Image (cartoon, rainbow, N blue to C red):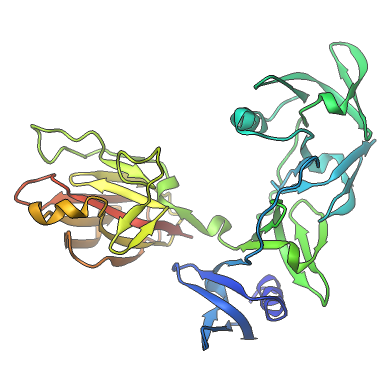
Length: 396
């Protein structure tokens, strides 16, 4: 087992109860009582449960997230976000916050946001952050619009920002600036091992975690080492690049056809909600459970996913989507659920509307194209033939 997981298991023994979620979607809550290189034991509801360490998806504490007001947000080149007071002199960036008190190179800082973020400019700010500018951007807010000046940012004090733009030097007051985005920042090649979320909402992209008697040690991919108390932790997410929800993967509907050509369907599929309820955010209903993530499909839908041999398993829970369950008995819908990997049939299953939900766990190793399709088996094709895969996810 890696030093990261070994350190995690030791620290769990010494901390408050947590909820552990595994890659197959199971959850355990309680005190961790034992651990080894291969597994750990958690006392859940009076019973000891053993969980293999390499199956951990996340660990979560009940700590509420409360984002601080009036403290700048710093994004590092690895994607970590810190809330800290910030000054820059030459190449040295001084950070001082609840989770960090350190000096880092200016080159490790991708952006600094001084002003509060609200829904009116959230989308604009995300778009600006996605850019890779060749000059520094001094971002200002004008009403509900973000604008920017291109130039070169120099030293930053507690009240002023030195800027060269348009052929002149000037000092800009920090209270007049929404944010700064630095030019030519390169993301580290090293991947993250775990994403840590703090109770302040800060996101830490870590390559390793350890714990001593008093503090958690978190080493960021960007090269910064932090020390935090257990009370500051919210979640440890080990999914990272190992898991991706199927609804987040681009697909085509090539081969889809309306089950009734006289009354063609408007939607063959919908992400994370029943068709027609996306704006309201209505969860998928399969059996007695609801799912916030997954795929909704109607019969004769045929979805093609380009996986490029990146994943090893397809997991989830499949069954009729029962938002309209009160109408199901009248029409008695039935269908056939099929999964293909590069043309090879992995699953073919007849499903009735009142069948119990079935777990889905398929080996898709070395698959370039995944195809999921439904075939009508009803006397009235297409009527209420709504199928869903809850928590549909791809595992690397």
